Amino acid sequence: MNNLTQQQKDDLHNLGRLGFSYRDVALNFGFDMAEVARQFQQEKGEIYECWFKGYLSAQAEIRQTVLDAALNSSQPAILQMLRYYALTEQANLEAFDYEPTTENQHREDTGN
Image (cartoon, rainbow, N blue to C red; front, top):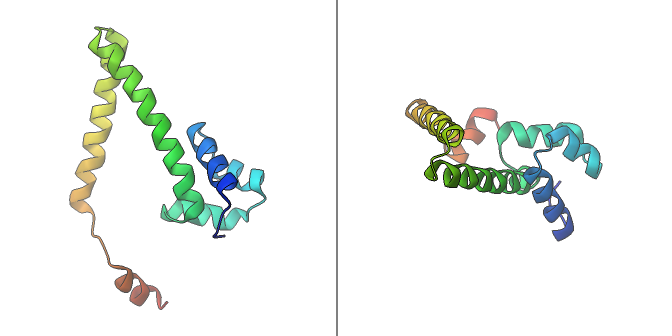
């Protein structure tokens, strides 16, 4: 499932921005459900990467809006930004337990 057209890439980006799931993506495009699920599980592949760029860009815009409101003294926005920061700090702590592997190590481990 490589070599997506530019229109498919744009559509995947838009579905990501709107928060649609991998199932919705697969059904919308007629892609193999197992292949799309695999890309989302592994967080790599052309479909996932196009979708994720859209998803992340929307999240960034939303957080920017919340930050702007927080900086203008909105108490709910301040609390939401603190939640975002706490989630980010927790996710970043997981990096200390992360053991990166090279592509060659992965191939040796899986026999590919």
